[in-house]
Length: 370
Image (cartoon, rainbow, N blue to C red; front, side, top):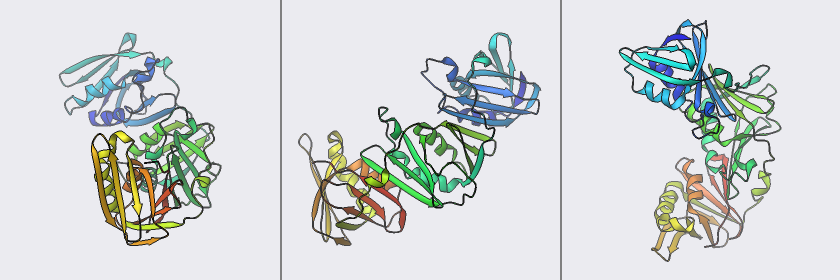
């Protein structure tokens, strides 16, 4: 293999693989990135950890077609420190790779291409089109609620489903649940009507890809894999094989108490009062009434904190309830400024956060004893 390629193009493609390649794997090949140079003048850059994979392409001047695997981190570090000149890559005997840029020369150790896992095939995948900004905004509102507890495998991802022309996403870690839905124009059969669980790592990588631009995304399902395609870039992730909890049962059907408050005032107050609750699982107490919301925390080793914010509207009897401050702050952080409302029943049942101008999103938070 022998080729010349723009440093910036290859650096960007390799950089996208760093969140996927395995850094402490029992399979050293998974720490590598696969470079495949074709006679058509295209170099494909592929990485996988067997659960999530990415494949991107760059234009190049290919003198000799071929392929090679190189440590993704080493290649990225080398490219990042090269001058902004074209890079020449040559595969040598014994899987060694020579990389040169102007007067700079590197020789990197490779591994046999034959040992690199195959990227999931796109044959017969039927893609549907989604708007990148819409998809990105929905993921932003639920991803933080994904469980990191490996023993609760079915909660380690985002549940996604199309119901009655609406794309629905739900994530929960057992302590809080976030749900968002948006109308979508999906006419083709997508496989999303039955619901799928996309893994946490795949979701995090997808969010990175959606940060850059106003792009259109194609999504497809084939057997146990889900694919997202943006131009020539493909992100593949293995679906979580498990039963997602019935999220509808988590959301109370009705509420006896509702309080309307300013989002910014509430977030600022929660951050202030939670300063003293770091070593107490972020626990704080909310006392809500007709005209004010009192937020307090107490730590016998540090001290006490108390703040009061106005309530513009309240229905129901006064209530005192405890919550994890971080869960409330996370749920509020993805909402725009303006008025939000908190819904309750009693101190033992979950509370719900909504925005008065956005009924598409809700965050359910389980109470805690303070």
